[in-house]
Length: 388
Image (cartoon, rainbow, N blue to C red; front, side):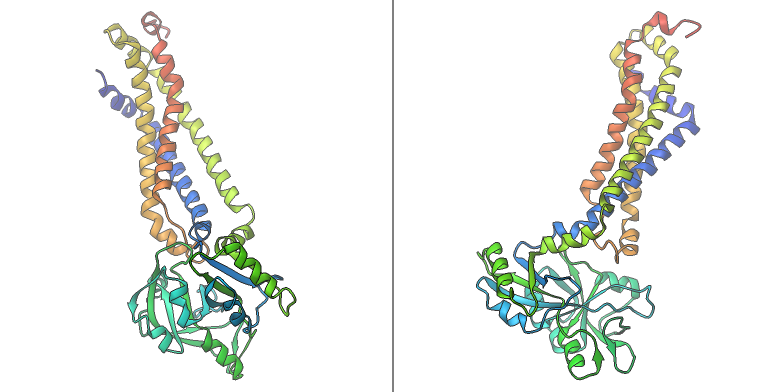
């Protein structure tokens, strides 16, 4: 069987083959990267716990709730645990070094978020050290921090009376086993912030951004949500209780049609490359006319002629797609670190890699179908005509 002709035909026009393959590499790389961005944007929704609720102001996420609400929420039947979450909004040294910081209940944080695993340091030190903080492993890579380091965070919301930065001591480095908690966040004791506000050492809103509520086993999520909302229906601050997935979805909805736009860009790139590959294979089919006539004259059937063109298209697209997928996997750590503030869940998943490779092979089938069908129907006398 003349399968060696596939490689020979591809190498007969090295520039054209290289340009077509390079286009496929870029297209598949872009598709994998764009899909990974979309996956990263929705990772918090997909990874949300089914037994956690978020209690926030019914007016706006930017309106804090009274501290007294925590005890009342804890008494609602079906609630196992509550944990404060207060957005801090500071930065390290320069405004460009911005990442998330939250004040939380240190004595309840681990129970509320069992997916958080402390890799370095003593987990108990978070509760024992008033100015202690847990940092995600991505922050250690970005800034080189380690357990025992003092981290100054300049405030944008909670200004210190002396005009200085807040000092936190790294007591632990964590990683999250799920995508709803990223590895680029600093958690500190909310009491450290509360005491500074009460003592006049700092200024800022005195309440809490949201309360994270962990349900007891078997509790009815809808019923508990409704009861919490009714509890504060008459104020002083009305609340809105949602599932953790819905809370995360709010942030995705703030981006409007960005996920759809990214998907549309990927589709446009794919269609453009399909036209390029189809043009290449149509040209290859016309150039192979005489060779295919000779092959058929030697006794090879229509199926061999069809397979030669189809396999040539699949090989070209498959190699280009595989390289594109490989580049997206190799670049994933750099993208994850660079986009950790905006898209903390960025990752090229196995599904994304399979999609990229599958799309490249599908392009090969579509682009090769027309010239392969023509090759299969080609008659010997027609192929060997001098004007053919």
